[in-house]
Image 1 (cartoon, helix red, strand yellow):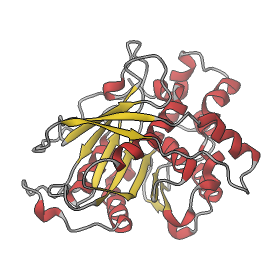
Image 2 (tube, rainbow, N blue to C red):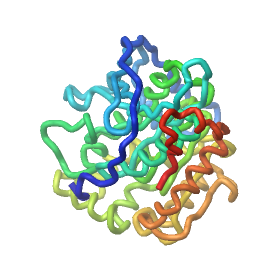
Image 3 (cartoon, one colour):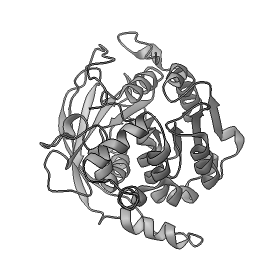
Length: 339
């Protein structure tokens, strides 16, 4: 691992019990649009899978999550640990009879998922369902051959994109969730998969990308700190040339599907002094999406200190998702605010 485990533990009262498995069918549509360039069409073909029925199990929560959802990965590898996707559900109280919006959070490189979990608690406290997806190699999805942080995820990048997209259908089937109002949010590493999945068919009504950028190979080869360490870890496992990095990253490169994102419903938040995801890479992705300045926000600080401004990111999400003010019906009075 690149980071010590055991950071940012939180105690929240949980009250949800398990319910029987639900039968869900993929609603994914990979059809290219009339103005899609060939590279976009090829990217869709690379990420595609055959839609079908699958089961979603809802289990009791652990830690600070109220419940856990599991479902079979759309692009299985044959490794049992990887082939079951897991979501941690942060469920506002009193939502069973009143459909409310939801957000799917795709975590960063850190093994403890601190940003995704902080945002999830904050959204729950504001009356919004929050679901944290565990990427391949994290949490319950750690294979027997455990690799350095992020390597398993990148080696299974198309699977990760499919997990994000299939998670939409699993979330939409849950009681109390408004299927027309499911946002996706990704941070750093997770923003890659969130952006690609959002470009598949537009199922997510809002997209929030934190510390995101385009040209992942350039980020790995020239970025510092996390990018440098991940590059070294990938080289250790045989991804040690430019051509091999391109083969690994290009299938999920967000620049390829960025033109399919709706700039009116997409927001990017970047750090001015980020050396992991440099500003030029952030601007490249914003241009590819077609974002106006009001949808591309810049925080003070770098890739790490900008996390101190996470409450502002939470407020942006709550404002745009449009479901604030539901904290009064939480039985424990927890405001759920991000630290």
